[in-house]
Length: 159
Image (cartoon, rainbow, N blue to C red):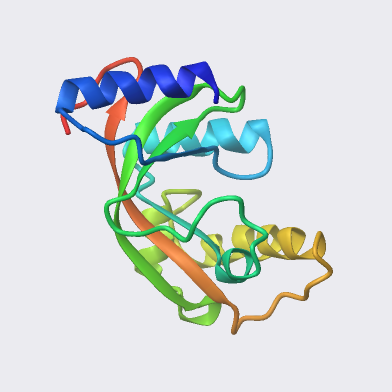
């Protein structure tokens, strides 16, 4: 396990009396640059939602388990260093075609519109699926997580 992850989790756990070590550590996106950009949106409290393909969990392609309300995640930057901890507050599973303006806004990227969300997510999902030789469809289920930033490395935020 990455030492920066263990250190940040331990600091959070001790500060808030958490007695378990149930969390996942991951970075947004598929590149160091994307990880840093999306993490910055989280730290500025612009990004409180994220989405992924349900099929990847269902088929076991995702290394993580399907998110659940109350899950903690340690967010990594583009250098795989722990920077923040989020807690999942809502999980929606719905077809890509039913992602709403609200979902797009909560992702916190670009102009925060549904159109922007579609313009960046469809190619991202297509690229993820291509690795497994699977086609994209607007009927595909999306796992949408609404989360709360509960702790960050530089300025520890009150939970």
